[in-house]
Image (cartoon, one colour):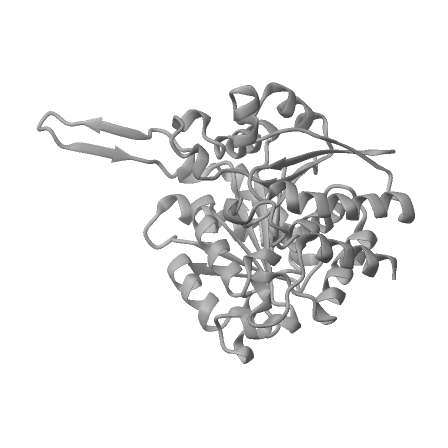
Length: 359
């Protein structure tokens, strides 16, 4: 069966980096037997310029019909003055909602060749390999009631509500436990159960799930403030971290910075059917768009995640990841990770990964 992909390059450096990922997909299709076809569509600010909306109906329908979506990046100063309802970033929220993408996977891995780029001491940074599993469609970002109201005495009151149901917690917990079974077999659930009743329930549900269905996975719990500290103090204690929408938003960004470059970090957002949206975690970097300076490796690694989690092609995922590791071992660097050394351009890095794939 041929897998159908929606390719959404987006804004800024999005088209630059997605083009290199598409090269990789082409080689996998033509030379390694991957049964895949894709179609491109506009999203974000580019789509607003063309169609008056950051997520045109045709783009949404393409995404809905696809087995997986590969996204570049959205946003930029050009569109910051737009009304909130049509800003480029609204396309991301709409895609998550319409596709039911409830589980966000954010790996943070330090490549041996880039240990010195980490803000941590080499002995602390070396060997970091963490998967943050963030619940993506519930929690305080979506809970009701919410909003700002005017009080009778002239003051204003802002309200956001942290809401989770037990089935939502169990659903994201299963994702974390299943991933841990394929890694080092450890899950750390992060909450604030000492002061937030919603996350006290979270802890109870995760504990019951682990004891009942995943006795082979070691489960621990940690308050979010301690987890933030431990990520810097002793990050290698973590294998899989699972947490709420807001906590995951913060902790995954913190974890990503341990690696030394966000240009190397992919992400996946999955629904219950296994379809997903895959994207690098970095932004659109409009200042270097079209200059050949963008790092395509995070987008290429997002393709590897797509192969593993949505297309059922774990062996090809391993091959793509090995190709990336090989080009780094060979000393190739884009400007964001080159330091004072020589740098290659976006296309050159993509070509090197393709050559490593073939080799």
